[in-house]
Image 1 (spheres, rainbow, N blue to C red):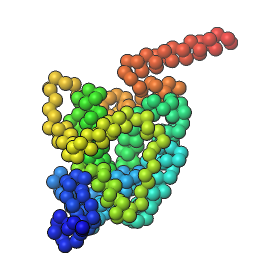
Image 2 (image 1 turned 120 degrees about the vertical axis):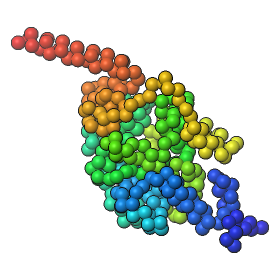
Image 3 (image 1 turned 135 degrees about the horizontal axis):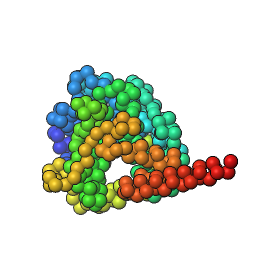
Image 4 (image 1 turned 180 degrees about the vertical axis):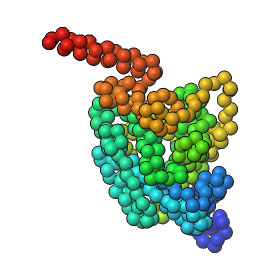
Amino acid sequence: MPVPCGSKCGRNAFMRRPKTGDVLCKECFFLAFETEIHNTIQQEQLFRMGEKVAIAASGGKDSTVLAHVMNVLNNRYKYGLNLVLLSIDEGITGYRDDSLKTVAQNRDDYGMPLRVLSYQELYGWTMDRIVAEIGRSNNCTFCGVFRRQALDRGARLMEVDCVATGHNADDIAETVIMNILRGDTARLRRCCDIKTGSKEADTIPRVKPLKYSYEKEIVMYAHFKKLVYFSTECVFAPNAYRGHARAFLKDLEKVRPSAIMDIIHAGEQLQIKGTVKKPVRGICGRCGFVSSQQPCKACVLLEGLNRGLPKLGIGKKSKGDRMVALQDQQLREKAHLVKNDF
């Protein structure tokens, strides 16, 4: 027997929302989903009238839904934003090259300018080459660090006021769990921030309009709206540490659907002792981009690749310094031997 829509619109319900348990028709679900994101944008004051906003577009469900919803809300509520798409090509054959076709479709569908930057262009390396060099145990470290800086580089080139990323509630809850498991207290509170960076600190802000949107609802929205998105998982992702946190979170969600939001709210309320050393965000002396260390992690990893020491940036800094010192000593000894041959 048909169940009436919980919003009393007169239509029959089509689904039960994973986030709230409400039974809604498709039209009411669309409106509820979009309105929640609008309320998040308004309450957190994520944008200002007339700003140029880059949407970090990967072609996946999150960035595709973000681009679609931002386009809808910008027109519906007259935000007055200039929306553009920014994509990073990591150089992963059979994954990123295909997903960029979806991003191009988003560009055409929403009439947003698109800029694509590649690791090859920025760093002289692709992820395929990096994985061939280091193996599959630490490849996500390289990709994550390079990608974060690549977004900053792209944002600066496009002269945008801020970057909107597709991080959803599940992503943020996973990050909280990962930081707890790693004992990374310094990043526990910051990982829940909906807005990071500021123009005052000479960094381009990043915002997360989908912070309180469940991944399941994002998938449902994309499916019922018939949005075109790329759903294949990265070929290197199965080895990522995040996968363990994701599996744990999914098990929790089965027992208690509100666990995702509970974890986020817990992370927001965490208070760290004043004696705990916290990273201080500054500017890297080599590349000029935001960093909490000197030189930045991206520069250290890139130096290791170029030196033939791919594990230079993996582990403690003291270990990396010893590796560099040993290599420099070997090069000096080799140069001395060559000199004596003449």
